[in-house]
Length: 363
Image (cartoon, rainbow, N blue to C red; front, side):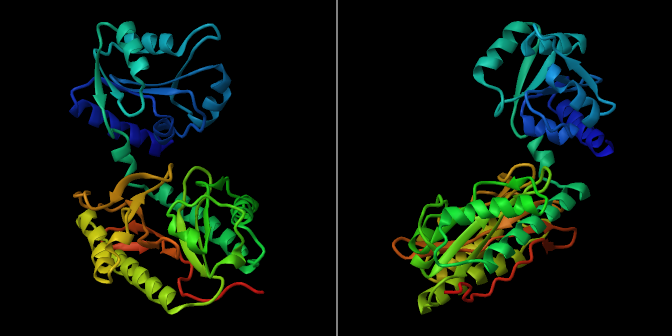
């Protein structure tokens, strides 16, 4: 429980810097990050000398198992969550309450304001999310396991790839293999795209067959217990044309140079520019329309972002994807994605799948 206690202490300090007495955490993922609780429909009050989970009778035993040492307030079967919040906040003598603006609805905000007329609600953004940007050793270990599961599942898929397989079948099989190897499942619905459909960065798997194109793009990830992974590879399923070889080479070089630039203190926008400038010089600036990468952890898309407008420095402990791409309608697309940890003196590429361009389908 020590790591969760430490996270709540950091949050309490941030709340005091805002001039609030306490924070009401209503984002369920943030509640998990701060407590280890894996359920939902529960809030957390932190500050004013109190740390209280607010939940309902369904989770009484689960809270005892997962949140040992943390005060818990359970509403009665006839009570309401709002009534429980009102009671706990008043008991803690909070006069200024920070609330998560991105999580709390306008309706709930208004109901809280009406129930707590003598409490000032202080909207906040990214209060816990900024803490989540920096992964501790436990989190990195969970991410490593999620990557291992994703890579094992991909190995099975790649070895068994056949022309008659469809995009949907491959997506379903990825989920099956991740669970077979002990994971909780895919960290997001896999993107599986044959041939020209790979020009869609977020292609939804269809009945298109592997043998209908010369390339297959797979973007997938695994969830180990709570933490995610996120990878992309392009497989050759037909002829390696000069065009495919050229575009793949540009994307691979852009990715390698961007990864090489990652270290503490470097602006996120500079890492993005490293890849973007190389792709632009090759004549494909308009064909790379998304950011270079994003953070991930408890969720598949978290802060920080490697993007043009992200003028913040990287810090040790951040884990990001690096995924440049080139997408040509009616032809296809190439994206290569790996997961990278920012270390004290540079970076570590956590994923290890080969990236050479070779044929992988047996006719």
